[in-house]
Length: 236
Ligand SMILES: Nc1ncnc2c1ncn2[C@@H]1O[C@H](COP(=O)(O)OP(=O)(O)OP(=O)(O)O)[C@@H](O)[C@H]1O
Image 1 (tube, rainbow, N blue to C red):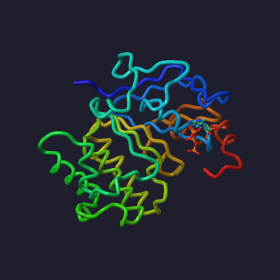
Image 2: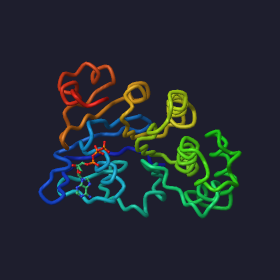
Image 3: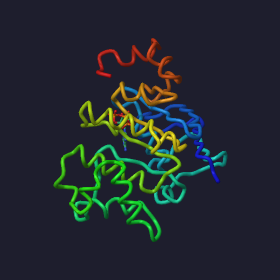
């Protein structure tokens, strides 16, 4: 059984003349929660897009479970990798349950999808179309969609965006709890909400203008001068 270890080696991404990522290396160890933070435009989403295969790096390479790996978006779920989207990205013409079933395979797809909705506290909306639901509920549905496939690597792209304090506390408990961290799932988290990042991450990578400026534990990052400088003037 593969372990869920992801390595990025000296990744560089250019969009024309713009350097979106510059020499980014990161080891995401199995079962760890690794955060990627940085001011707006730092390259966080681009990093996720590289790992998802939507953006091909101009430099560097990736390994998955120690083997060279070239990500392809349509192969991610087969490899046990799931990603939530920054928005809620659900199909309006389908029910909540059908949306969650999209990411699950096999005869038990419906039961697994329903169980994921239940664990995320939104099973009562299974038969409803997502477009009619409040944003915070749709964010939970988006999480259920990612969790239903029981991924070994879970990429969370700004999961706290648009959530209130209680919702963010719920999210933190979910990430730290048996559904994700205690089950050994490897988590990569891009997030602006610093309290959440600091409370759930084992390690944090800080990007600024595409460059890695710090890598360390939440305690190390919160006292790092370069990180403080990068955030000066930008709400963290
Ligand atoms: N497809 C693209 N084509 C051209 N430039 C792009 C593209 N995607 C991202 N960029 C640019 O690359 C840089 C990094 O963007 P990215 O979205 O990765 O940053 P981010 O850290 O996720 O920002 P935010 O916190 O605002 O979501 C930005 O300058 C952005 O404008």
